[in-house]
Amino acid sequence: MLMIPLLVLLSLLDPVSPRAPCAPGQACDPRHRRDAGGRGGVYEHLGGAPRRRKLYCATKYHLQIHPNGRIDGSLEENNPFSIMEITAVDVGVVAIKGIFSGRYLAMNDKGRLYASEVFNKECEFVERIHELGYNTYASRHHSTEQPSPPGGGGGKRRASAKRQWYVSINGKGRPRRGFKTRSTDKASLFLPRVLGNKDHEMVRRLRDSQSPHHHAHHHTGRGERRRRRHRARKGRRPDD
Image 1 (cartoon, rainbow, N blue to C red):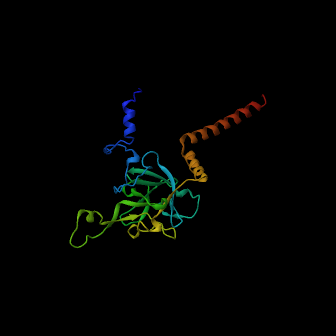
Image 2: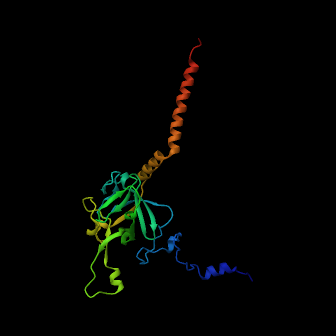
Image 3: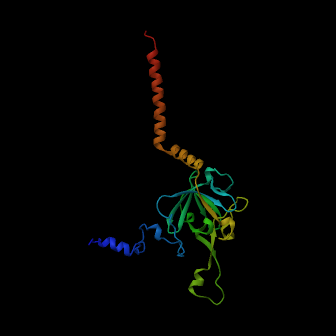
């Protein structure tokens, strides 16, 4: 009779073993992560390398971050300022950075979107997946405090007394103030689009232009060509 190893037998009986909660400061298996509100939404994309996407709003504009710090929407399909790098900074929380502007999307305490040169807490957004593949991005640290109903209430009621402020681009391509937004508004729904061939080519050129090796190789090659031409001219010089 064949003997089945104990570990194999256990794996057959329990293919998905329960895992202990993630310890502070340690990376978790993204398959076991839930959204920041603990509502059970599975986020397969958390952790690992940043995602490069274009955030296409339901109002038909691509979110874009300009080098001068302006935030707005673009109708262009291949606009370099619409190419974002989305990185998980916590469970269900992301940072959104414009690759070509080098700035982070942020929302201040007045609900205004701006582009920050450095990462700070206002650059953190709670990402939630909605129907039809659209996502919402709510400020992690700024929201509207709603007054508690008369007569008090239980802990659950007090916990839900905040209204989130969302990243939102209206029908004219302009950002909306966070306290005027709702998660159900078209202006707050974004479809993370994968990059096309032209987008990848723009990113590749940007990466090459920023590479020190590329610059060194370019200048070295140009200097070597000059030296070769100089030696060739000396070789053709007639004898005295």
